[in-house]
Image (cartoon, rainbow, N blue to C red; front, side, top):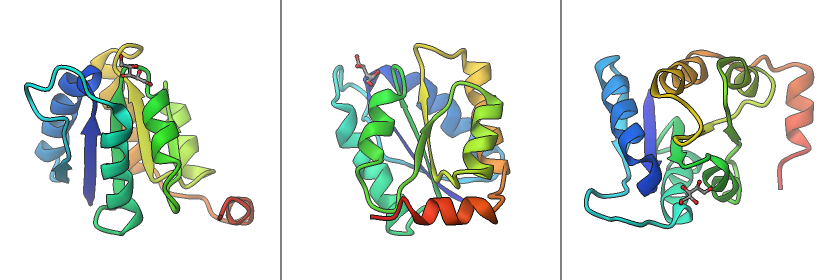
Length: 143
Ligand code: RB5
């Protein structure tokens, strides 16, 4: 599975840790920045790069990290075909997959410990979509 990974400055350290963890598990990780040395970055710039990679089919899922996850999710959800969920726990991530078929995960590095963030990523990437009644609801989201 190919993962588009991106952060702003606030999420940089978590992005690196998550990227290393995913690579060690055999995921193909496409790191879209923010580059080292950039002290302050605008989260929409990086959210859009990853969201577009998912929407185009170049990547299967996206993982975005900023301070709270809020800005990343807002920006990613502007891209047609992207369903981004800002998750603060493993159950939330599992349900975002099972019920909402979320294809992008947003995380807040200032709100979550790294261990929890890694567990949320794993829950997100290993849970499938339930389909059925949820599919009809998702159809109503299509622009
Ligand atoms: C950056 O200070 C912070 O605003 C950003 O990382 C994010 O939390 C926005 O939603």
